Image (cartoon, rainbow, N blue to C red; front, side):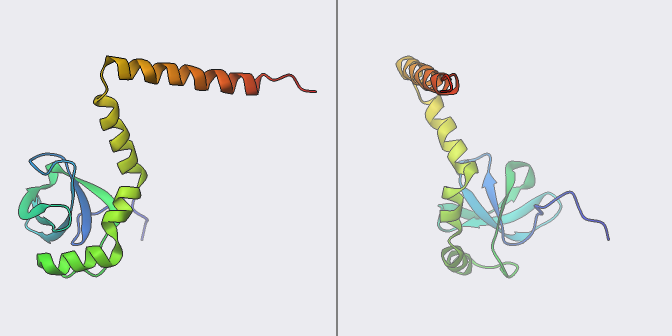
Length: 136
C-alpha cells in the first residue's frame, strides 16, 4: 500500500475552521458526515451551533478528537474537547497566531502603520550593525 500525500481527511472528530457565515473564524468539530458535500458540525465551546455545513466553507485543521462516535451530541463533544484541551491547542497554534497578527495588522490606522515601519527600520539597523561588526 502506498502512502497518501494527504494527512487531513474529512472524518468524524476532525476539527475544522469555518470560512463563512456568522461563525467565520471559529473552530468546530465534524460530528456526522451527511454526504460528499456536507457534514454536521458542532462547536459547543466556541459558540458554533450544531448545523449542516458545506465542505467548501470549511478548512480542515491538523487537530482531531480521538474516538468520537458518529453522530455524537453536543455534550459528548464538549467533554471530549475539554478532556483533550483542543481549544487551548488551537489558540496556541502557529496558524492562530498568524491569523491574529494579520487581523491586528489590518486594524491599524495610518499612524499605526507608520510606527510599525519605524520599528522595522530600527530592528533592521540593529541586526545590520551586529552582522557587520568588525572581527577582533
